[in-house]
Length: 216
Image: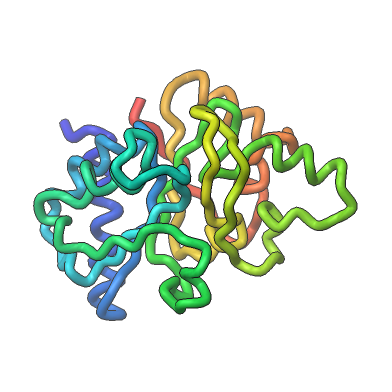
């Protein structure tokens, strides 16, 4: 019997190859952390036209690329191997949009969720700032300009970060949210109605359906 990781990897590869067949190229945006590694290990073995795929990270920690905390390192070590080593990887930076390196719509987005309900580097602290401010929250406002922004030290480990905002994340044709483990599944259930959890704002938008997947 095929594992969930293999099934998800196959589904992602089919989306990418379909986009390549239709448009001549495809884009994959992925999270870091431990959640997607099993998927990466199946995905990098799939035989698609990887040289026509551009890979982005949805967020990263602002550390050296070779740091153990770098999503860039994780993606290169686990995804951009075997057949997928032919794909182009573009590290996340705040000038990607101005340089026209971001496609009008990403072909495929793979997100993870933390135990505090965060996804990408969109954390609960940002929502608290929104409640206490009269200014619009550009990180979570889906009508905001798509953007890539940096943060002060946040999360675990507590490090400065770079991330796509929700408006840019939603410029995707397909989004999978990985929610592994019972603790995270409980948080996901709470996020269906708790506005203080970042994932609430991902689930409640109506621009694109969010596919929920779990490896365990």
